[in-house]
Length: 382
Image 1 (cartoon, rainbow, N blue to C red):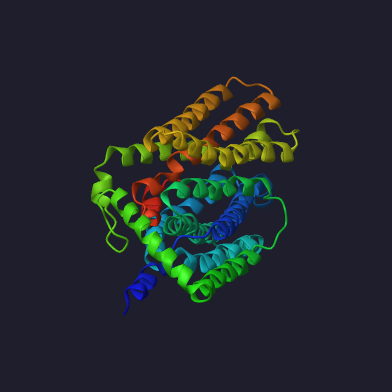
Image 2 (cartoon, rainbow, N blue to C red):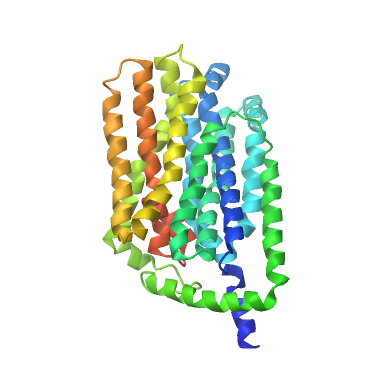
């Protein structure tokens, strides 16, 4: 086999995207993450009405909402490794189909659960499997972005893609066909696969050769110097203080965010029963959409001015955590709906800065094993 042929075989599955492909995949991942979170936030938004219909108390509501994360967290541990091994593009089509179907038929499945005589067991099963299906999305997305972008673009693009999670919360009440996303993933994968096999062959080969030097440069930046096909350097990661600092920061921020994410609708409904649901369901989520879209560009701006990756990530994450902590401490002093709404809106906005901080750290820690590290570091994320 010729040298060029070996390069094609080695790098065709992880070649760098063109500018057009980067824009297409960024939009695709943004909308895919948006759809995923729209389906996820549906139950918390409907929790009050469903509790009245099925006779749930606070414990029942909390158990049914939280059991989703049992399946989600367990799946994330292995999802990233699988995505790194066989390719996230091959996984997303099928896992998206799983959670789309379960979301689409949630009302019927809940009715069936009560008809079966084992309501709690069936409800937990539905929610856990929904979590399993959604658990593959973010690690697979992280793995794909890491394979096809340079170090300078990974953080910005991945941060924008993650911002779709908050935009999905805003449009959760809109009607759309989630199964269209499965078709879109398949068509996009087929298109990029065909493009690798047709047209501009010589230009592509030269591009692969140029990207080889970039890939080798990225290998040297990874702790432990691991190659793409080697084992994840967990021992090196676990022995490094920065990894644990990022993990603790991730846990603290995610714990605060998902408490708000799951319970804000119930909190406002109980505390201010005459307030309009569309206001307290949408306004806090809109604020985090704005800041989560701005944060990757803020981080990129700092890096372009010569600030180190460590300084940039610390600054963005510190602003996020301190801002959230301050706002949540102020909640107990509020006494009116609009004051509470403003405080929670600011808290959610502060969380959005996280997308320029720890959320993109897996790309910094292990660029050749981003999916695996994302799943390990962010197992407490959701």
